[in-house]
Length: 272
Image 1: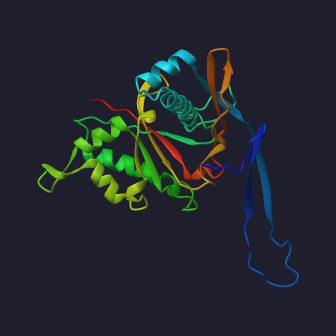
Image 2 (image 1 turned 180 degrees about the horizontal axis):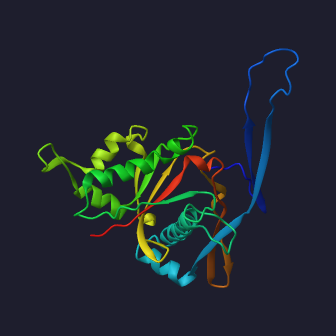
């Protein structure tokens, strides 16, 4: 989460600098030309949007709640906060074309990789493990190790499937190690705490098919950042007659991936 954009901003700009060039060997004062390096800056402008809601209660409802020893106001405020958290989470993952904000799933510059192997109970376990590992290593293999993912978020349905599927032992029988455990053991660049089950990556609709998502990324603000402008904030209570309203808002600037090469989104077909 990045909080550099301050409350009151209408939009914010993400800048990315690309460096190009190659040094050469100096072979005398008359050498021409001397190689140059160049810089190219690219900017993207994103709007700031505001998530809002309110909790209303009457004087008589509050009196009844007090009589029943029910913390109605606290529960109402908690529900309003949770509703804002949920819509922000939806924007983080899915974004909103209507509101001009990108999320993980609709980020335009993020590489998307469709795995050809269909995962099922009858599929070759070694092949399935290999496909997931190749996806995890995608960033480093495609960037000459300039980028490397250090975190993995997996559809909870795919996670559970891999956790139920046993790899084969030397005799060809199922061993005590699951496919998920094998993948986690072999993916040495991913710390144990950086594996995540994510329901938002389950049952994605891609090209008319339903697939499970695997998002490999780097926990670094230059690789991916969630732009939080203003945390959920309550306004002063507003009372009109017998009705009191608690208004709340949160300001949000979308998902930005400057070093998007450290991230990749994989699609896997799962048949159970």
